[in-house]
Image 1 (cartoon, rainbow, N blue to C red):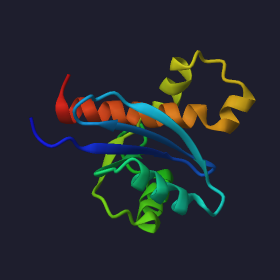
Image 2 (cartoon, one colour; image 1 turned 45 degrees about the horizontal axis):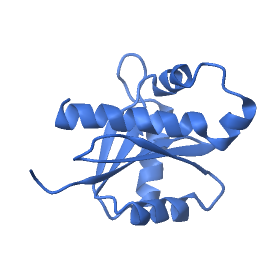
Image 3 (tube, rainbow, N blue to C red; image 1 turned 45 degrees about the vertical axis):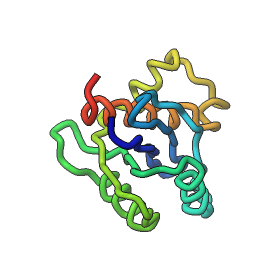
Image 4 (cartoon, rainbow, N blue to C red; image 1 turned 90 degrees about the vertical axis):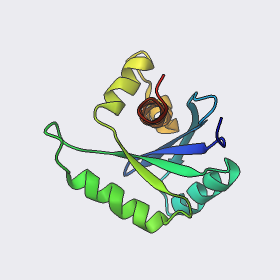
Amino acid sequence: MGKTEYLLALDVGEKRIGVAQADSQVRIAVPLGAVLVDGQELTALHQHIKDTRADRLIVGYPRNQSGEPTMQTAFVEQFVARLNPDVPVHYQDESLTSVLAKERLGGSISRRQREKGVVDAEAAVIILEDYLEQTYGH
């Protein structure tokens, strides 16, 4: 077996950024909550990268239904450029992750749960699970 790689996933939104982690050996994505976009998000995310000893950042990459980039795609790319992490970044297609996250969480998400970023963190979990499956298989 090769070296264990620690992975941190982000579901970048304009209000909150969902965060999840996993490693290449266990391959179970775990939600870490959400970071509010309040001017301190870059510092908070750098702390997450440090705390999880992340070797790679997996960032949800939005596209439209035709697979083309959108305004949100440009927003995510600009955000990652501002974050400027000192680890490699891999963009992972995030089509329908928010819809799937809501379904997984039972569909009826309370306003309080939404404000706490439960859906955002679950979306980051789904992004990370997709990456793990594509990269490492079952």
